[in-house]
Image (cartoon, rainbow, N blue to C red):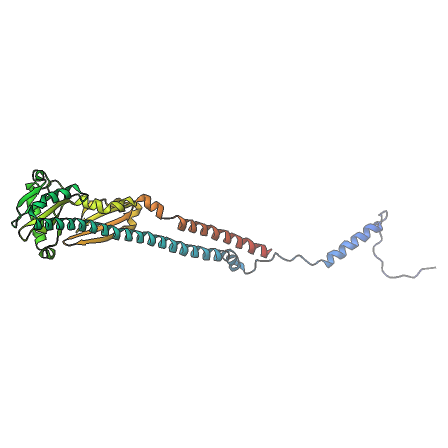
Length: 326
Protein backbone atom coordinates (compact mmCIF):
# COMPACT_ATOMS: atom_id res chain seq x y z
CA UNK A 1 0.00 0.00 0.00
CA UNK A 2 1.31 3.42 -1.01
CA UNK A 3 1.98 6.08 1.83
CA UNK A 4 0.65 9.60 1.39
CA UNK A 5 2.99 12.37 0.03
CA UNK A 6 3.60 15.10 2.68
CA UNK A 7 4.89 17.75 0.23
CA UNK A 8 8.29 18.70 -1.09
CA UNK A 9 11.28 17.82 1.03
CA UNK A 10 14.72 19.27 1.26
CA UNK A 11 17.70 17.63 -0.24
CA UNK A 12 18.38 14.32 1.23
CA UNK A 13 21.54 14.17 3.23
CA UNK A 14 24.38 12.80 1.30
CA UNK A 15 24.79 9.23 1.76
CA UNK A 16 27.34 8.53 4.37
CA UNK A 17 27.38 12.21 5.73
CA UNK A 18 27.31 12.49 9.52
CA UNK A 19 24.66 14.66 11.13
CA UNK A 20 25.88 17.64 13.28
CA UNK A 21 25.81 16.99 16.99
CA UNK A 22 22.83 18.65 18.68
CA UNK A 23 25.04 20.88 20.92
CA UNK A 24 26.97 22.26 17.94
CA UNK A 25 23.82 22.94 16.03
CA UNK A 26 22.33 24.83 18.94
CA UNK A 27 25.51 26.94 19.26
CA UNK A 28 25.46 27.83 15.56
CA UNK A 29 21.82 28.79 15.79
CA UNK A 30 22.52 31.04 18.83
CA UNK A 31 25.41 32.83 17.05
CA UNK A 32 23.25 33.46 14.00
CA UNK A 33 20.49 34.96 16.14
CA UNK A 34 22.99 37.22 17.97
CA UNK A 35 24.41 38.45 14.65
CA UNK A 36 20.93 39.32 13.45
CA UNK A 37 20.14 41.26 16.66
CA UNK A 38 23.49 43.31 16.95
CA UNK A 39 23.26 46.64 15.06
CA UNK A 40 26.16 47.67 12.85
CA UNK A 41 28.98 49.65 14.55
CA UNK A 42 28.52 53.44 14.42
CA UNK A 43 31.26 55.54 12.74
CA UNK A 44 33.68 57.31 15.19
CA UNK A 45 32.18 60.47 16.69
CA UNK A 46 33.60 63.78 15.50
CA UNK A 47 34.85 66.28 18.15
CA UNK A 48 32.18 68.62 19.41
CA UNK A 49 32.36 72.04 17.83
CA UNK A 50 35.12 71.11 15.42
CA UNK A 51 38.07 73.50 15.10
CA UNK A 52 36.38 76.19 17.16
CA UNK A 53 35.94 73.82 20.07
CA UNK A 54 39.59 72.81 19.93
CA UNK A 55 40.70 76.47 19.96
CA UNK A 56 38.49 77.21 22.95
CA UNK A 57 39.86 74.17 24.74
CA UNK A 58 43.38 75.55 24.31
CA UNK A 59 42.67 79.25 24.88
CA UNK A 60 40.31 79.20 27.85
CA UNK A 61 43.05 78.05 30.32
CA UNK A 62 45.14 81.07 29.25
CA UNK A 63 42.52 83.59 30.45
CA UNK A 64 43.16 83.33 34.25
CA UNK A 65 46.93 83.21 33.62
CA UNK A 66 46.75 86.37 31.48
CA UNK A 67 44.77 88.18 34.18
CA UNK A 68 47.42 87.27 36.76
CA UNK A 69 50.22 88.42 34.42
CA UNK A 70 48.59 91.84 33.90
CA UNK A 71 47.89 92.27 37.62
CA UNK A 72 51.47 91.26 38.47
CA UNK A 73 52.92 93.72 35.97
CA UNK A 74 50.82 96.58 37.32
CA UNK A 75 51.79 95.71 40.90
CA UNK A 76 55.46 95.52 39.88
CA UNK A 77 55.37 98.93 38.17
CA UNK A 78 53.61 100.52 41.14
CA UNK A 79 56.11 99.04 43.62
CA UNK A 80 59.12 100.06 41.48
CA UNK A 81 57.79 103.59 40.97
CA UNK A 82 57.05 103.97 44.68
CA UNK A 83 60.51 102.78 45.59
CA UNK A 84 62.14 105.15 43.08
CA UNK A 85 60.03 108.02 44.41
CA UNK A 86 61.14 107.34 47.99
CA UNK A 87 64.84 107.25 47.02
CA UNK A 88 64.43 110.46 45.02
CA UNK A 89 62.76 112.13 48.00
CA UNK A 90 65.72 111.16 50.17
CA UNK A 91 68.08 112.72 47.61
CA UNK A 92 65.92 115.86 47.51
CA UNK A 93 66.02 116.17 51.28
CA UNK A 94 69.79 115.59 51.42
CA UNK A 95 70.43 118.17 48.68
CA UNK A 96 68.35 120.75 50.53
CA UNK A 97 70.16 119.97 53.79
CA UNK A 98 73.56 120.24 52.09
CA UNK A 99 72.64 123.69 50.76
CA UNK A 100 71.63 124.79 54.24
CA UNK A 101 74.96 123.62 55.66
CA UNK A 102 76.93 125.42 52.96
CA UNK A 103 74.91 128.58 53.57
CA UNK A 104 75.65 128.30 57.32
CA UNK A 105 79.35 127.90 56.58
CA UNK A 106 79.29 131.10 54.51
CA UNK A 107 77.31 132.93 57.19
CA UNK A 108 79.70 131.87 59.96
CA UNK A 109 82.66 133.32 58.06
CA UNK A 110 80.78 136.50 57.19
CA UNK A 111 79.84 137.07 60.83
CA UNK A 112 83.47 136.44 61.91
CA UNK A 113 84.84 139.15 59.60
CA UNK A 114 82.05 141.53 60.68
CA UNK A 115 83.11 141.07 64.32
CA UNK A 116 86.74 141.69 63.33
CA UNK A 117 85.77 144.91 61.51
CA UNK A 118 83.74 146.04 64.54
CA UNK A 119 86.73 145.38 66.80
CA UNK A 120 89.00 147.42 64.52
CA UNK A 121 86.46 150.26 64.48
CA UNK A 122 86.59 150.32 68.27
CA UNK A 123 90.37 149.87 68.55
CA UNK A 124 92.63 149.92 65.51
CA UNK A 125 95.34 148.06 67.39
CA UNK A 126 93.05 145.13 68.15
CA UNK A 127 92.53 143.94 64.60
CA UNK A 128 95.85 142.11 64.18
CA UNK A 129 95.40 139.87 67.27
CA UNK A 130 91.81 139.30 66.17
CA UNK A 131 92.96 138.37 62.67
CA UNK A 132 95.52 135.96 64.09
CA UNK A 133 92.83 134.28 66.18
CA UNK A 134 90.67 133.78 63.08
CA UNK A 135 93.56 132.22 61.18
CA UNK A 136 94.13 129.75 64.03
CA UNK A 137 90.42 128.94 64.38
CA UNK A 138 88.24 126.32 62.68
CA UNK A 139 86.94 128.57 59.89
CA UNK A 140 89.93 127.85 57.62
CA UNK A 141 90.84 131.44 56.75
CA UNK A 142 94.13 131.56 54.88
CA UNK A 143 94.79 135.28 55.29
CA UNK A 144 93.17 138.50 56.47
CA UNK A 145 93.97 141.65 54.47
CA UNK A 146 93.16 145.36 54.56
CA UNK A 147 92.51 147.04 51.22
CA UNK A 148 92.21 150.76 50.63
CA UNK A 149 89.44 152.34 48.59
CA UNK A 150 91.51 151.91 45.41
CA UNK A 151 91.69 148.13 46.02
CA UNK A 152 95.37 148.17 46.90
CA UNK A 153 96.64 145.89 49.69
CA UNK A 154 97.55 147.89 52.81
CA UNK A 155 98.23 145.21 55.38
CA UNK A 156 98.16 141.39 55.49
CA UNK A 157 98.06 138.82 58.28
CA UNK A 158 100.19 136.75 58.08
CA UNK A 159 102.74 138.87 56.27
CA UNK A 160 104.11 135.88 54.32
CA UNK A 161 100.78 135.45 52.53
CA UNK A 162 101.66 138.27 50.11
CA UNK A 163 104.69 136.30 48.95
CA UNK A 164 102.67 133.12 48.49
CA UNK A 165 99.83 132.19 46.14
CA UNK A 166 97.38 133.00 48.94
CA UNK A 167 97.63 136.72 48.17
CA UNK A 168 100.24 136.72 45.44
CA UNK A 169 100.38 139.92 43.34
CA UNK A 170 99.90 137.88 40.17
CA UNK A 171 96.25 137.32 41.06
CA UNK A 172 95.47 140.88 42.16
CA UNK A 173 93.37 141.56 39.07
CA UNK A 174 91.06 138.61 39.85
CA UNK A 175 90.64 139.76 43.45
CA UNK A 176 90.06 143.38 42.41
CA UNK A 177 87.25 142.23 40.09
CA UNK A 178 85.66 140.35 43.00
CA UNK A 179 85.99 143.39 45.28
CA UNK A 180 84.22 145.55 42.69
CA UNK A 181 81.33 143.07 42.75
CA UNK A 182 81.25 143.30 46.55
CA UNK A 183 81.21 147.10 46.42
CA UNK A 184 78.09 147.01 44.24
CA UNK A 185 76.20 144.81 46.68
CA UNK A 186 73.39 146.27 48.76
CA UNK A 187 74.76 144.48 51.83
CA UNK A 188 77.99 146.48 51.62
CA UNK A 189 76.00 149.70 51.61
CA UNK A 190 74.67 148.73 55.05
CA UNK A 191 78.11 147.76 56.36
CA UNK A 192 77.38 144.02 56.22
CA UNK A 193 79.76 141.36 55.01
CA UNK A 194 79.65 140.30 51.37
CA UNK A 195 80.98 136.92 50.19
CA UNK A 196 82.28 136.89 46.61
CA UNK A 197 83.98 134.19 44.57
CA UNK A 198 86.95 134.78 42.31
CA UNK A 199 87.64 133.26 38.93
CA UNK A 200 90.28 130.48 38.93
CA UNK A 201 93.65 131.88 39.97
CA UNK A 202 97.09 131.01 38.61
CA UNK A 203 97.28 128.06 41.01
CA UNK A 204 93.99 126.66 39.66
CA UNK A 205 92.15 127.32 42.92
CA UNK A 206 89.17 129.60 43.37
CA UNK A 207 89.04 131.89 46.36
CA UNK A 208 86.22 133.28 48.47
CA UNK A 209 86.67 136.83 49.66
CA UNK A 210 84.64 137.81 52.72
CA UNK A 211 84.54 141.61 52.46
CA UNK A 212 83.40 144.16 55.06
CA UNK A 213 83.67 147.96 54.60
CA UNK A 214 86.46 149.37 56.82
CA UNK A 215 85.09 152.62 58.30
CA UNK A 216 83.93 153.59 54.82
CA UNK A 217 87.54 153.81 53.60
CA UNK A 218 88.57 150.49 52.17
CA UNK A 219 87.87 146.88 53.08
CA UNK A 220 88.75 144.19 55.55
CA UNK A 221 88.88 140.96 53.58
CA UNK A 222 89.08 137.36 54.77
CA UNK A 223 90.58 135.02 52.19
CA UNK A 224 89.39 131.40 51.88
CA UNK A 225 89.68 128.60 49.36
CA UNK A 226 86.35 127.66 47.81
CA UNK A 227 87.07 123.95 48.18
CA UNK A 228 87.70 124.29 51.94
CA UNK A 229 84.30 125.87 52.51
CA UNK A 230 82.51 123.36 50.28
CA UNK A 231 84.29 120.43 51.88
CA UNK A 232 83.10 121.64 55.27
CA UNK A 233 79.54 122.11 54.04
CA UNK A 234 79.36 118.72 52.29
CA UNK A 235 81.19 116.66 54.89
CA UNK A 236 78.06 115.21 56.49
CA UNK A 237 76.45 114.51 53.11
CA UNK A 238 79.48 112.56 51.91
CA UNK A 239 79.69 110.69 55.19
CA UNK A 240 76.07 109.57 54.78
CA UNK A 241 76.96 107.81 51.54
CA UNK A 242 75.98 110.43 48.98
CA UNK A 243 78.00 111.90 46.16
CA UNK A 244 77.92 115.65 45.53
CA UNK A 245 79.02 118.28 43.07
CA UNK A 246 78.78 122.08 43.02
CA UNK A 247 78.34 124.18 39.89
CA UNK A 248 78.68 127.90 39.36
CA UNK A 249 76.50 128.69 36.36
CA UNK A 250 77.20 125.63 34.18
CA UNK A 251 80.78 125.07 35.35
CA UNK A 252 81.48 122.36 37.91
CA UNK A 253 83.75 123.90 40.54
CA UNK A 254 83.76 121.13 43.14
CA UNK A 255 83.01 117.46 43.60
CA UNK A 256 82.58 114.46 41.36
CA UNK A 257 80.84 113.89 38.04
CA UNK A 258 77.31 112.52 38.26
CA UNK A 259 77.94 110.78 34.94
CA UNK A 260 80.20 108.36 36.82
CA UNK A 261 77.68 107.75 39.59
CA UNK A 262 76.32 104.50 38.12
CA UNK A 263 72.84 103.58 39.35
CA UNK A 264 72.79 106.59 41.67
CA UNK A 265 72.68 109.03 38.74
CA UNK A 266 68.98 108.22 38.28
CA UNK A 267 68.25 109.76 41.68
CA UNK A 268 70.43 112.90 41.40
CA UNK A 269 68.73 116.07 42.60
CA UNK A 270 69.71 119.76 42.41
CA UNK A 271 69.27 122.54 44.97
CA UNK A 272 70.59 126.10 44.93
CA UNK A 273 72.64 128.04 47.46
CA UNK A 274 71.80 131.74 47.18
CA UNK A 275 74.17 133.88 49.22
CA UNK A 276 74.31 136.91 46.97
CA UNK A 277 76.31 137.52 44.98
CA UNK A 278 77.31 133.85 45.31
CA UNK A 279 74.89 131.47 43.60
CA UNK A 280 75.84 127.80 43.53
CA UNK A 281 73.92 124.76 42.34
CA UNK A 282 74.46 121.73 44.57
CA UNK A 283 73.80 118.31 43.02
CA UNK A 284 73.44 115.29 45.30
CA UNK A 285 73.00 111.61 44.45
CA UNK A 286 73.25 108.31 46.38
CA UNK A 287 76.55 106.51 45.87
CA UNK A 288 76.63 102.87 44.71
CA UNK A 289 76.75 101.37 48.19
CA UNK A 290 73.86 103.52 49.38
CA UNK A 291 71.78 102.62 46.29
CA UNK A 292 72.35 98.96 47.11
CA UNK A 293 71.03 99.58 50.63
CA UNK A 294 68.06 101.71 49.59
CA UNK A 295 66.83 99.89 46.49
CA UNK A 296 65.13 96.62 47.39
CA UNK A 297 64.72 93.61 45.07
CA UNK A 298 61.15 93.13 46.31
CA UNK A 299 59.49 94.46 43.10
CA UNK A 300 61.51 92.04 40.97
CA UNK A 301 60.77 89.15 43.32
CA UNK A 302 57.06 90.05 43.19
CA UNK A 303 57.16 90.00 39.39
CA UNK A 304 58.87 86.60 39.22
CA UNK A 305 56.47 85.11 41.78
CA UNK A 306 53.50 86.43 39.82
CA UNK A 307 54.77 84.87 36.58
CA UNK A 308 55.18 81.50 38.29
CA UNK A 309 51.67 81.69 39.74
CA UNK A 310 50.25 82.58 36.32
CA UNK A 311 51.96 79.56 34.75
CA UNK A 312 50.74 77.24 37.50
CA UNK A 313 47.14 78.48 37.25
CA UNK A 314 47.16 78.07 33.46
CA UNK A 315 48.38 74.48 33.67
CA UNK A 316 45.95 73.61 36.48
CA UNK A 317 43.01 75.06 34.53
CA UNK A 318 43.92 73.08 31.43
CA UNK A 319 44.21 69.82 33.36
CA UNK A 320 40.89 70.45 35.13
CA UNK A 321 39.11 71.06 31.82
CA UNK A 322 40.59 67.92 30.31
CA UNK A 323 39.42 65.86 33.27
CA UNK A 324 35.87 67.19 32.79
CA UNK A 325 35.87 66.09 29.15
CA UNK A 326 36.59 62.46 29.99
